[in-house]
Length: 157
Image 1: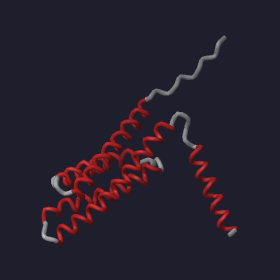
Image 2: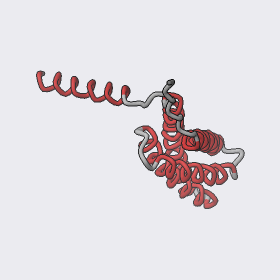
Image 3: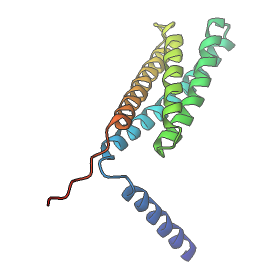
Image 4: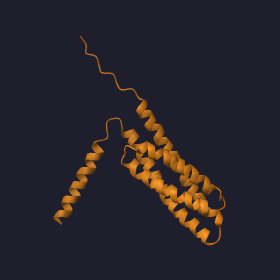
């Protein structure tokens, strides 16, 4: 029991340290990271589910689902990586978000080829949401990097 309390206490300290270490003025950007990470996680689950659906369709002889099966599997993997990296605000957040937006665009397009399939339509919608969230995060990151640093205040004589 004592070991559990120690571990819980350490986890709380680490969580608070991370929360406190968000630089002043960065809270707004942190919100974009959190929104993007959630959209990526949601999309990953939708793509995994859709890949299973496509596999069932293939098993029933619908060979036109082969491409969407592959795109859903790859998109789910990219989205999973993006969610992890972006949620911790890792140094490769921009790189993975660019890749994730591209993967979601392609997967969404592949799933939209089946407009009468409810499962495929749902996956395409999640892909579009994730693509949008990644692009918004990239846009806000770009704005953050192009800001000029404040000039030091001059002393009055």
